[in-house]
Length: 165
Image (cartoon, rainbow, N blue to C red; front, top):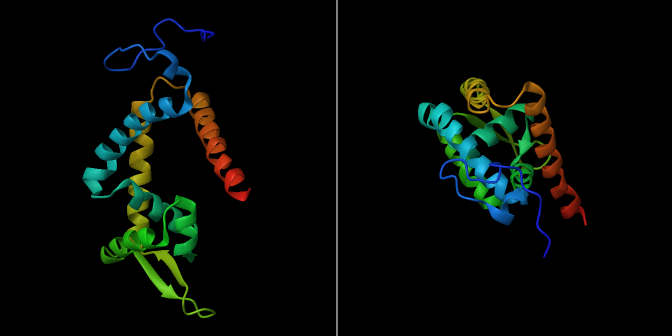
């Protein structure tokens, strides 16, 4: 079995300083560790202060930038079942953050839009997340941050290829 090259002190867990071994080169493993940081930023900046869950923010942001989107498309985008997205939409509608209207062309279809309060919440949350991530990831240059976002987006695009097959 061949050994992967290791960079001194770069293959240790951030907090406990445990050696990662072969897991160091696994993208999913590194994403899981990075998710800890992203989740902490979200919880501190948005989750507690705005009483918002990550999935709720994601739905609001997608609806904000895709007015009249359908629940079916949201479910597909988030890789959840239609009944699950319906539960989240019910919660957001109960908080008056979204509004659903029936399609004139097909009464079975509902179009979703953010309300003015939902739009304001997305704006506040997005600003807080940008600021929180900037502080949390201050070791990254602006170019590295842009590169990381682009690479993660390219990785997410692999799902499109897999589901199209």
